[in-house]
Image (cartoon, rainbow, N blue to C red; front, side):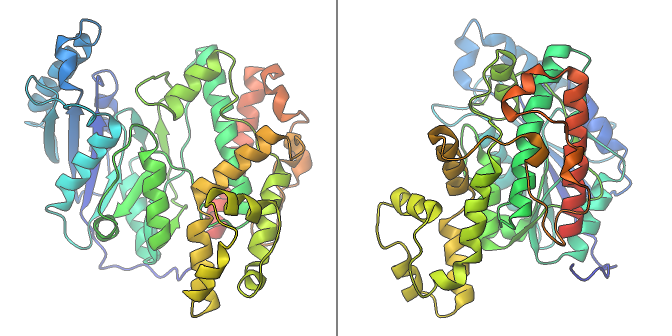
Amino acid sequence: MANSKIRTDFNPHLHIAIPAMDEMEWLPHTLASVERQSYRNFSVHICVNQPEEWWQDEQKRSVCEQNAALLQWLSEYRQHCSFSLQIIDRSSAGHGWIGKQHGVGWARKTLFDDILASSSATDLVVSLDADTEFGERYFETIVHSLAIHPQWVALSVPYYHRLTGDDARDRAILRYEIYMRTYALNMLSIGSPYAFTAIGSAIVVRATALRKIGGITPMKSGEDFYLLQKLRKMGEVGTWCAECVYPAARYSDRVIFGTGPAMKKGAGGDWSSYPIYARSSFDKIAETYRQINRLYTEDINNDFTRFLQAQFKTDDLWGPLRANSRTLEQFRHSFHEKADGLRILQFLRQEHLGKNSHPDTLTNVYQQEPNTMGDEPTENFPVCSAESLDNLSTQQLSDLRDKLFHLEWDARKKLS
């Protein structure tokens, strides 16, 4: 547990970064959450965006027109809102994205670069989406968390998707959350440095750290995942905040993968890209973690190390790391740079597709460990295989999601 003494002199300016495309229905609700904040030292930056060519596309032109309406609404809203509002227009004719430079990744990069151009050393960048709501103390708790954890370069905020009343949509978001939370709980329980959930609407970054890694790398999908991974290789990413955000549960095909596409794909009955990975696969990673001291002096041959060697196309993955590491701690850091969150995810997928691990029931989806996962017994989970989630009622899925949410909440808090 980090020193819990609060810095009373820590009063950072928060830069709220919101990409928006066709968000007239949702953005006013997000800004209403912003208006209610108890912490007032912040400004809001919104990038309204879409590709320039959509103005000439009959099917996409309606998005451009909705963005034009949103820009007009924001211009009027700025006249009476209680905070500084910066509007970046990458939407109106002549200002849209050109070529391959488009999508939420480029919108976040544009926002972050604009913020970094004028931010000070203590400022925080709060990444949101235009469909996300939160309580009135959200900004306050962000500041509190980073004040008592000065070693954190970023914060992965807890999240929770509220149900909509539409059964198909609710089942899709519940199933996706169960996938994400079983993954997170297993990663937390093995002590992985990459035990965080990357959701674009639930990330806070210190401006100094964002500047040090050169900002965000724009990608069509997964820019939030790669951002947190880069930050984790530089410093510690916290996972605890006393408030959570509430992103909307909605279908989307704007990105290749993520919540919206997962829901859309899952609603059609295809969850192959979002399986419940077996605990035995995480155990293989955990066993390698426990042998890092030994790996510092001699090679270890197991499923995870063989996978890493194959990924990096070398039989001598560890020799160069040992040669460049003066201490065990340096070697440990280098190991985790190689065996990062992406490699872990690739390993789990290979295990799952190769059937090298036995499917678990959700009664044993993670293994509790001392001082890590709390005291609630796994026997309290519903007895069903990961493959039979489709047979559960929506209420049973909701109950399971909520149980996982509370377990993850407690684990995040205990590890902070």
